[in-house]
Length: 59
Image (cartoon, rainbow, N blue to C red; front, side, top):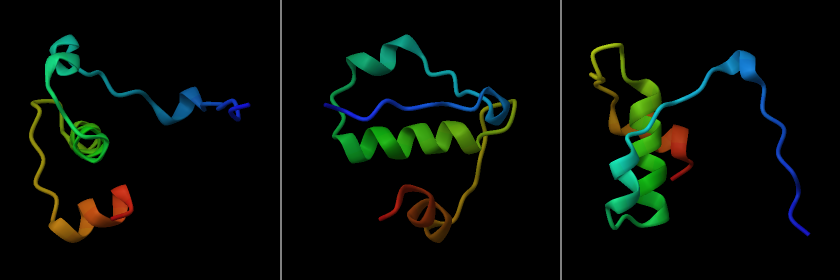
């Protein structure tokens, strides 16, 4: 049986466009996209280094 997750609402949420589910992404690409959305500012921009992305997605 899968371990249930408990989320802390105080850490925030990431909104993703519904159309994202129509894109054929590997699990790693999806995780990277979510991380980029998480790092984006209010206008949707972010400029992480490859090292930052690597650390944040564990690759």
